[in-house]
Each structure stands twice: as C-alpha cells, then as structure tokens.
Length: 128
Image (cartoon, rainbow, N blue to C red):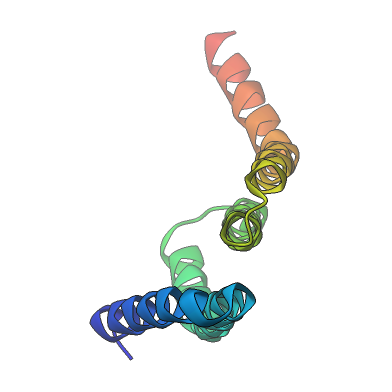
C-alpha cells in the first residue's frame, strides 16, 4: 500500500466520520479512532524495513550502535506522542493532547541527553 492509498483511506475515514456525526456524534469519533489504529498498525508493520536500513547504515558508517538506537527511540516516542495527541484532539480534549505532546518532547530530551553529552565531550577534546 502506498502513500496515495493511505491518503485516500484517511480522507474516506474523515468523510465517513463527518457524515456519522450527523447521525450520532460518538460514532464519528469511533470511525476516526479506527482509522488511526489502522494507520498505526500499518506504520509499525513497516518498522522491519526501517530496521534493515539502519543495520545497513551501521555497516557503512563506523558509528556506535547506541546512537542509532537512540535515534530509533526518539522516532518511536515522536510517533506515539503524535498518535495519542491526535486521538485526544479528535475526541475534543485538546488540553490533554497538548500535555501528551509536552511529555513526548520531554521524553525525547531525556533519551537524547547522553548523545548530547557525548557530543560535548568530543568538542571539548578538539578544543583543548
């Protein structure tokens, strides 16, 4: 399934949700949540391709695996936070969605702190 097909499925889900809101409002939310879960499972299904590419990068570039693992963790946190935030906003709880996004950003900062520390130590060696 390519991006064009996924985009069309997203638009169809939104149109169905808008139509369902006229019948019963909660059904529209259920349609959107079902579409989001579909996209989540499709996205996580493609993680195998991403992991294979990262393994190839490790072979080409002599880089410590911890940096690539950190990059994957940051990507996963971003994806999860955006997904949860979108569901909160669709359900009408935008304040909760904002809190989820903020927690996601703080989690990314916590995961990336060791990488930033290693970068600063490397710069210190070059500047000394």
